[in-house]
Length: 342
Ligand code: PEP
Ligand code: MN
Image (cartoon, rainbow, N blue to C red):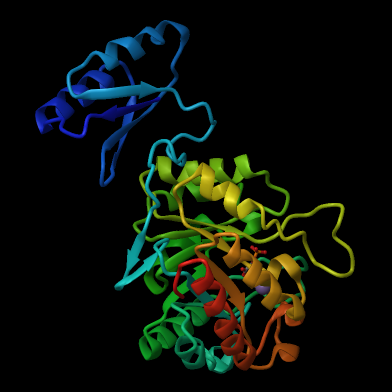
């Protein structure tokens, strides 16, 4: 249930309304928009509580009381009508500017894989990605450098000013990743790791939450709800492809471009697209990045490696720094066409 306060409601009226709602067993999350204050009331609205809607509507300062029909409440655009803009080191994610995060699939030895950071920055990216803890299908594949990888990322941040985005695979890794990274990534395989989502919800770091490979849109939004419910609403959603009947040898997953406008409609959170994992092949990165931007994505997460063919993970889908710089030029044209910058 949401309670929308009148634009001219006083602080005292707000306090009284909050107190009254809480006294009926609801938890309150406040959304302070430019126009209005909306109170997200979390708790079961049982049949006998339905009459509370009339009761709350009659309180002074209240404009409207509505039930949110979707299963996700605090993630819903009804609760927070304006887009969420996440501010980090003077950079805004989710605003008018499209923000691009690029870097290798995995951070590899001797900083080699992070060498392109400078080119990535110059080309217009705002963030550097790279896995230090890697979720791999085979236990015999490269598992990431762990803490050493985080240190290399942090060094690259010092040198370039790029924001660092890297994956957290389990609850025990959160503290160390928080120390080195600006944005915590939850990978597709962990989108339904509810303990991890709950604990990340207590972090003060923004979170990049990737869609599970067979998750419906509602499941993605409920995963975000787990995080927001714990107090952290700095969540960026990322479409990264789903399994489906059209997955053939030509693509790794089905890139669900339509998820972008659907998510933008259902939620206020920034929506990113990952052309690398969703397609699996480097020649598809450019066209799918352009498509995602045209469809309304707020940002992209792209794998870039100095020598893609030698990469220790996802070699087929990584592009070179030069190809990345070229891609950014093309993106600028689409961004301009839809009235955004990059
Ligand atoms: C990644 O971005 O490093 C990654 C492992 O992707 P996903 O979780 O989408 O498979
Ligand atoms: Mn990868």
